[in-house]
Structure formats: structure tokens, C-alpha cells
Amino acid sequence: MKFASFIHAGRAGWGLVEGDSVADLTGIFPDLKSAIAADGLTFAASRAATAPKIALDRIAYQPVLPNPEKIFCIGLNYADHVKETGRSDSEFPTVFARFANSQIGHLQPLICPKNSTAFDYEGELAIIIGKAGRHISKADSWSHIAGYACYNEGSVRDFQRHTHQFHPGKNFPGTGAFGPVMVTPDEVGPLDKLRLQTRVNGLVVQDALIEQMIFDIPRQIEYCSSFTRLEPGDVIVSGTPGGVGSRRNPPLWLKAGDVTEIEIDRVGLLRNTVIDEA
Image (tube, rainbow, N blue to C red; front, side):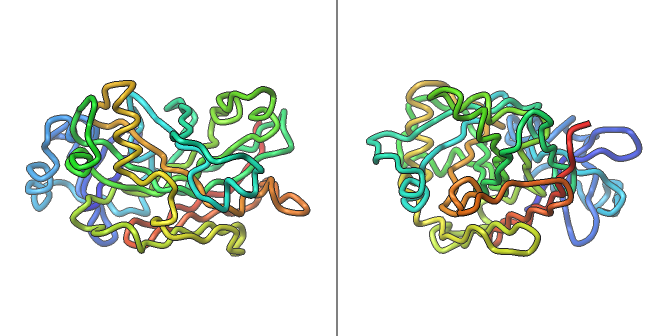
């Protein structure tokens, strides 16, 4: 199943995506997070046949989860990215947080900050938590996943490097793209051989397999749940491969008019155009 969050006719909604339309399920649960928390995705989807249908070209996509309680980002999680940054290996995942209001949806503009000239892309796989838990074992981790989505974890590198803390450069408004849909695990299937690719204006700049992660998804869930309780609708953004713009010679910074695409096999294609901050 594929689910999207959207705005239509001035109203926020969510629903089941089938073909070129979405069945509006807002009358069953108020939003996707509520449906996940109630373990109600299958029930809601069973009502899709009689739900109002909206053409996808009539909606404005929101972030897949517009209102997550927590967004965890995993840094330095592909060996080629660790190498290009010059950092050393770590025994534990590098974790930092994003604010929900830094996010945008599919086809919405990525905003290049006016106070930076170092806006970068990061293609990643996002994991949406479906079942709450603390101290979740790796063996049990798969049962806590509601679905997957594409993520562009846009990074403002000069602010990221002001100190050893990544946080400022990861939370500018309109820099984190999340979408277009959440795909449930049964539809995605095994993850290891899935290809993650980032393109800027059609040029492939990142290309990796999910199995190349240093800390796999069970380890990420295990670690994050060791220091906080994961809740339904929480998001883990699982790390980016090598090829980021800041490590190219010359650097490849995003600018107004650029088109970014994050594509992951069986998960989706996330596309956004860059604009300058007003």
C-alpha cells in the first residue's frame, strides 16, 4: 500500500494512492500519523473503494508525515561518505535531529537560504515507525516499521560546520524533502538490493545499494530506542551515500532552478526544484 499526505481545496488530508489518484481517507482517521498509531492502515485502506477520489495532479503533496513527534537522522552511515568526509569509523551510529517544520513534500520547492552559499543534497531512505517501543531488539525491529519513503536531507554546510554539532545546518526551513508516499513493507519487500540514486538536473551524483549501510536498519532502531521511546509516526532518516556536493571538486552547491531527484527502487521518486529564499 502507498499512502500520501496532501493539501486539496485548502484542506489537509491523507489517503491511499492507487494509480493516478488518491482515495481521501481523512474521514476515517484525521491524518496518517493517527492511522499508524491506531494500527488502522489496513482498515482505512479497506474503505478506499467508497472514499472520495482526487487526481494526484490536483493535490499539493505534504511531507509524508507532516507532524512526526521525532525525526532522527543518521550521519556517516555509508563507507564512501565516511571516507570523503575524512572522518574515522565509529562504534555507534551518529544521530542528530530535524524539526518537522524544516520539511517539505514532493514537488514542493527546496529553499536555498539567503544567508548561505553552501546548500547541499543528501539522498536517503526514511523509515517510518509504526509501533511504539523502548529497548527494541534488532530481531524485533522489523515489526516496528510502518513503511518507507524517499528523503532529501538537504544540508546547509557552512552552518553545519560552525561547531561540531550538525543541528543548525540541518534545520533551515524548506530544506528537508520527504515523499512522495509512504510504502508499506509488504510492498517494498527485502531492502538490501534496493538502489538509492540522487540526481541533480538529471546528473547522477549518488548511487548506492541499501545493503552498503554501515549500521543497518535494525541497528538504527535498536540504538535510537535505547535512549528514547520510539512512537508511531517517528521518522529515522537512515544516512546518505558518498557523492555529496560539498566533497566534489569543485563543490556542487544547489542553486535556484536546480531540480533534485531521489529515487529508491520500489519506494518512489522524490522530485523538488530549488528556489531562493524570499
